[in-house]
Amino acid sequence: MAVLLIYDQDNFMDIPSKDNPGLTGYKNVERKILAKDLTIEQKTVELGRNERNYTARHKCNDIVESREEGGPRGSMEWLSYIFLTVDGLSQKDGVRYTEPDGTYWRGHYVNMTGLIPDKDKNVTISLSEFNSRLKVKS
Image (tube, rainbow, N blue to C red):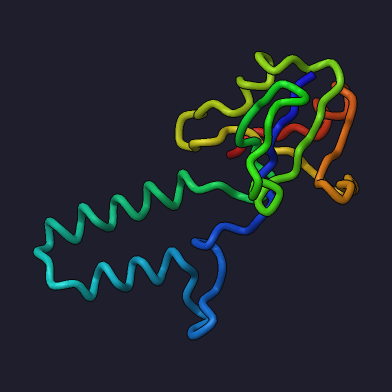
């Protein structure tokens, strides 16, 4: 069975700043680039990089990785991920949900509404339930 790592946080680029709630991390980086003493061309390159990073960011409920059940876990992974075990899905089949999909670095996410992880942040669902919860980013 596949264990899918589901990103379980808001990305810093989407979180409002504590000092200025009107600025998200994305807008704050943009503001810093514009304030730098750079040429217009250099600022354009930096702003483009910021935009690509924003588009490629992890978002809550993204499928980030597919692993074999029982595989090792990093000591701090539980802080950022839910471990979704899908009965009937092989690790190889799970990998396709982690691959880039055109514009997005992670092309799929899972609707986690109503799924309650245990104390170790594990959730197990059937393949049919997984398929009904699977979404493609748009």
